[in-house]
Image (cartoon, rainbow, N blue to C red; front, side, top):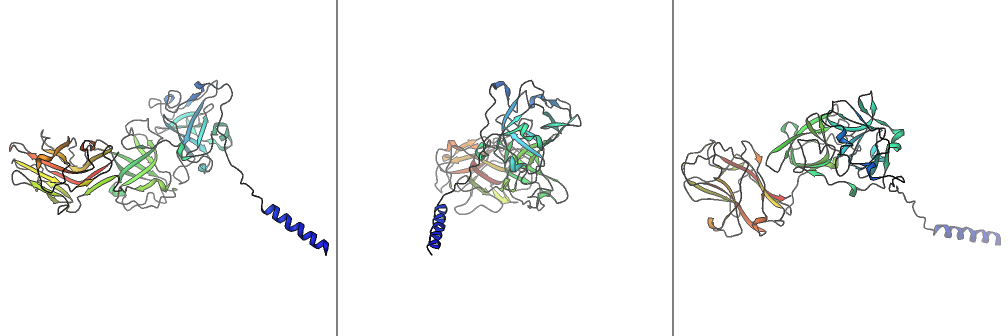
Length: 441
């Protein structure tokens, strides 16, 4: 009996002893990379430099290669900005440093497991080549003596060194519409965010890609000068987000800017890169004239000279109220006035309008934008000041140039569109406005 009691005491004692131990989880970490002893600054290259991208420029014959045959080891320190998790990248990975980006050709699927977005890496250039695929810069091995081929996965550790743990804070800030050089090569293979873009009508109602083939849908990217840049959203039929249906809405799209010959393309990485543009009251004021905006405590019109006035029709506010591009030569001073607007961030805010104004002569002054800090419901033109010069005169709907609102000086104000031609000899044109926005940079 005493033996049994002793065994029970030992059993429960052992259980309590080990059961109360707090076993810590093993700490997983990747050491920060330390250059070999004796490494000098000249051994580090930047991507957009004469040593890397500069060795293979647009003047280099297509399908030719430039080899990195250096006496000493040469390194590029960069961060992974692409991902094949969404199925749109295949055996390729894009890295970017503070100067530029380049695509690596790698013979392995599921690269995001080893090199996730935000992973810092060190690329050992020795033994690699740089070339291009239809003007898109790529680095890899030689393939058939004249093309960039994929590096075998058994040799990844020889060329790609992980530098610490991945962190999204390592990523560069995405370039936006007004920062991207669409005409040149400097921003290829960089992380970008295209804001307030719309797909062309033939894409609406269709998926991002069909199951049987890669799809290339065009989008219009609004620029600061009121014009648009048309680029292609290229989506693989293996993309996991391919069945997402494109809607007739404005999108914010994040991805990697690429090119195919002279056509700029956006490569979306995962479905999280696809977002609807949805301004909040804190960062945008939007007036959409698809329905009549006139009424009490809404927009108003005031005609001070002649018999003309602003009116609503065809999903826009327009002046004059007829169907001709040129109106009769009559004196006029007509105002389209907003309700009171409260906007928090004057310092970085700007106003722009989606409009048609096909000026067919040399008279640009009749079309003006004003503001007032008075909130009185009684209209007095002497309280209004010019906000800036309109410099956009499109024949079809486009965004105007931006008008900074910092000069207004107070967060509560009104704006107005003045159609002013006091001299009957001035020939004026239709002005259609379908959307007004105030938003931040």
